[in-house]
Image 1 (cartoon, rainbow, N blue to C red):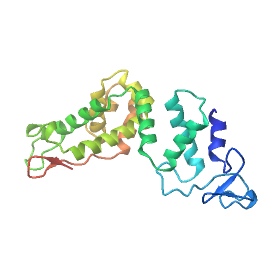
Image 2 (cartoon, rainbow, N blue to C red):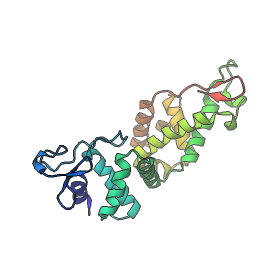
Image 3 (cartoon, rainbow, N blue to C red):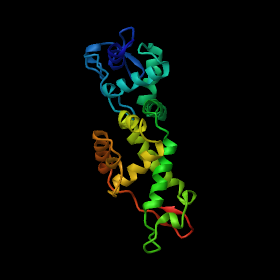
Length: 230
């Protein structure tokens, strides 16, 4: 099935035999089906709660996308759709992770290099709160930053890359991955350099607007044991 057929299949209430089910039993009269009330629209899924959506209309496109990524084909089977839809409505981590990995591949980004560039820049440009007029990199290195903060930065940068894969790919065609993290930090902090200062034209302006929308970075401080927290 291709997209439109797949969406119709995933959002209908009746099974392949035309039976409507309710609480594990076939509902004899489709017109009074508690789920669709005769419309054959699965609608509200009544799942425990899913990050991907609460209705079949929300979840179906995501399930189709996951099935297509897994098969590498626009034409997917019912079995592949059912497997993906089951994971989507039951709030599995797998669909989101697979979609992000796929989009990350389209962007051409090395997320580890981007994170390293961001953190190195934060150490270089950030002030040491315990030592007046001293930058963090004079007293700390990458290994001194807490893993909790590193994971938070990675999640934020991954969100940005997967939301704007084409812009990231265009940037990486001219600059190295670590520079993206470096420029993102400088731009969000409104320093005298960053995306806007790379001669990228409209792309630089676009990335600048994104960075500004995220606001200033969290300030790093020593927890008293030589570990930097935010």
